[in-house]
Length: 315
Image (cartoon, rainbow, N blue to C red; front, top):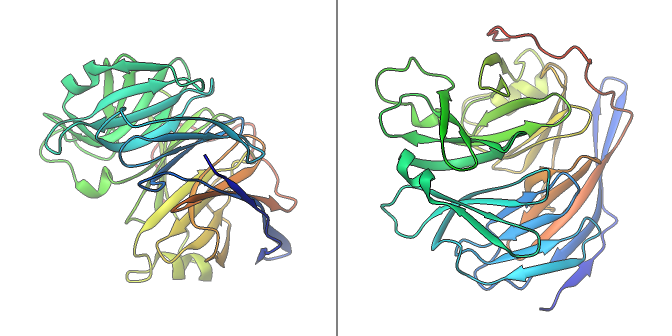
């Protein structure tokens, strides 16, 4: 399979108060996937799985080198992907448009595992995150539940449903449509909705910690979150410092502080859509037939060791 390693010298500068943050591209890799790259699952060690809609998989190392590829056959329709701390790829998908999602687990050598019991839960999954203890969190509409998020074991056993909801009635589709992120450093789960300027924070067992807006008293955040300018969040990632990156459909990047209170904002148009980050600070982007990595050059400080305490709060 032909791959071309493309280096670029461009960078953008994000400035807030006296802090200067530079997002510096490292490399881009061109992939020859027949139906194009639709999903990218970034592993904590920096390796990346590129997955096409039809289930073709390419593995790329943190240095942009080919690490293996597998043909079609996971699912006819892939819906969400994530990478676990052990480097396994978690893929949810369907074999027909009307079916509910199943879960497949693939090792970095191409060995397939599958947990068909996820189908029994009746969840149409829009996002997935792999937590510790082999548990996964998924966002999606589950039959008989008005909660948008669900904690499961890797075998498909439902542990609990949680999130913004009262447990009765119909789930709001806006609260199932977004990005689930697991923070190794904070041992917390984050959900960033596509159409709401907020970040939801949960403990690893699904207990609510906080719901925090993007801070409309700050000019950049206000511009990012105003009705009409926030069309859609297209990507989100958590850096090792605890800072959160979110990207709008116009490819505007906002860097949120660990407590989602201080933001750095800048337009970004040429690296592609934000796919995730690794534990070393690498930030990955996907654009049709290529994957790229960049890094933040700054003096960002890590979050407080105390973290957030349980208790819902909206800023």
